[in-house]
Image (cartoon, rainbow, N blue to C red; front, side, top):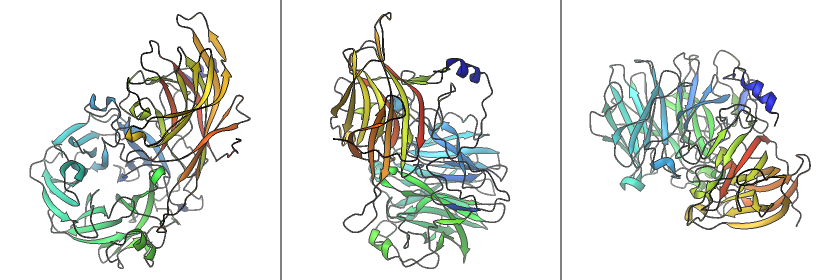
Length: 587
């Protein structure tokens, strides 16, 4: 695997920030305009802040149980983004999140720069445990160990505000699944450092029984003497964005819908962060729920009308929006709709095109920042090497194994576009019967193609599962039988090796519901090659399905039956994303 070259490369300094342009999605049109979404990947519940210099922007998003968590993205212009860090390497309590806790963990974080103590904060609510915070002086550097500052169930979507008088306030939403009420927002006072509550919560907004039901995800701001809470309402796939204002942090607040679908077909444009630029412009970043693809990130211009933030462009007749959600509030001149293509923010300069990295050659001893595990990292999940590959060890299945919903060692990344192909060069090493490794598209439904050892040969299998989250069993289809590339007879437990190129294709197929609403569906197909040039389509198509509060992901799987004494593994030479390469499956 080009060991000498890679060893020499490891001695060179690693460039921390280099431009990368995705082959499958780029929002910067190169002519001073951008096309939404600016991040066509599942950065759910995004929040953004302006950095200490006034010239940097930092974005974070929900990461739930996945580790590392709390991704940190950096931009100079709100259009071109780079993954630079994760604020949380492992979620506390560490034993709880040592195994997958799908849908739990980090909900709707908020990132802020506190100019009074020159510190960055990220707050989030763990719906089962309470309000957590982590801090740093440098978003690209080390963040403090997460600290639970308010214990209790149900508190989610937390956002702080430091006032000019040194006081600090915290707003949050509530999860009905944990505390049996929701649609309300509460505010409480904190100590000046934001690390301890010093008052009880006060309900400042109640959307129950109104078109603003499911009010959640609030963000706290202050502008020209007015306190602002901006929040989504109306439900994740169908809702709208609210802005509410008051002369006191504890209200009372008046509210208006300031962003809705209009006639754009962009469902549920809401929940995100507002930023004010040095040029005087205002912008809002929010998500769109694209079902199997997760929640992708949009950028909207903000214009102030009668001291209300109108987001996007002028609202057009909202018939299509009403069809999506007949309970929408009456929309007026203060409500905008999403823009598709628009001039880039005025940040005083033009910056190079940069998109979040997808490809990985595994040429360094640090795992790429695009990857996450399904639980807190354990050394037995996998390890980098200085030889140009990453090793993923087999997950040892439980005695009552049903499917890979239990596996923490899945090495996964977000889908980066509506249409793409992901190809990996793999070498599977099996110490024992039944050990396997391969490529996977993972969600509540999943499918993979793997090489599994059977005797001294390997079977190419498709392993699939529908309703994995419900504990349903896998189905296995044998696609081909292959000779081992080599058998190591001098090892204390002889190894069988098999090398193969594996490919997963994701193709957007769209569609509509019976009522005419847009759907975001994708067809997943697989292919393999022995030489990396001629690929053979194989297996049955999968209709891609999201995970628990996250989009489907693609990556590497490796597992083995319970009771094995020596683990098998898969060495990943490289993983590359390219434009969709469709092949016809021959029956």
